[in-house]
Image (tube, rainbow, N blue to C red; front, side, top):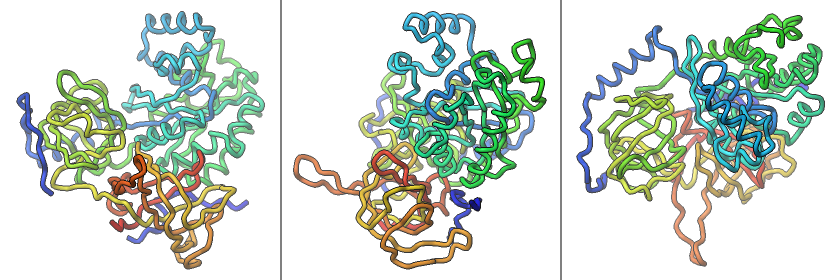
Length: 492
């Protein structure tokens, strides 16, 4: 089967290119301490300096039970981010409920339900440092039921760490049609992630078999190319997460069998060489909210990743949709209080002068002078995945954009496109089948409340040409991701 580099490389799809109502302030809000030009200058300097560790975020993906949380828990311990006391407490607690093999995963799976069920359900955020990188880790759920949470995590990441289970039958079930190994790779690539490290885990359970490792790498390589990952940005590493083999080092008697045939880098060596993407700090500020929680005192806190621009303490921000504004009381990056944050940072913003009722997961924060358009209807260029039921006009779907998902309708199938040249193949096609590239018009569906239909509320969206992160969408139907695309134009 001919592989198609561009199948899902959405950035290579040949794209052609108010008044603010400020709430009454109870406590004295902070003043903006530095002029915007000065902040931009500082941000530019910080991004350019070689002395500082470069920040990068990574989403951990893979089929359920591949050992993602265990691998990250063990890695945090090996790097000194998990102390002995917590480690022993996790071991005792997991043993008590008869799940001692999950003790490492407890470092990331913090809720009672996650611990009792032995699965990750929500995105867990951790940080770790390698010699040259400061890494924000988003541990994503592998279970099919929690794909929306995984999408939310992947939309905040620069790179992906794919964990696969090398035991007989387990790799195959994750990689076959419907398995999460395949779906997760397609999703992260569709959301703009271009670099991936594949950790081939549980090799200790197959006697550190070199032939099994090579068989798995051989099966994944063509699929990665077909999904749009360049071979130069794809790395493979054999690991044994439970025993901590080849995560930080490959020394000691437990690693002897692996060292007989593997002389390559460790997982941390590969993490340390990830290339941070270019940060667009001069573009308008965009902060998609991935979590809302109570701040200290009367305020509210939100977390998310800056998809452009810079934000500083004392700045007034508009929350969309809605016409509310908030003032940035303080900013935290990795539990450190900072005066400003730049594009690409995963931040927590503590806000004041806004009612928490007006902030939701999926809201976008922006400057009142540069608002994100609210769209109820738009044209997108999409790649259709390996679907069984074709997409037709009038089809009901769900649109995922960052941490928001909304019901929508395929209003019109405009044309099918040749992926290589970007030229129109057919106008007004009747249906869209698997692997087709097409332009479609989508419209949000009105939600009905007790019999009376309410007006459709637009979602904050931008064209891909304006802001790549704000212009990507995923389309799902019946619990399955059926297409991914980029926004070409907003109709209203």
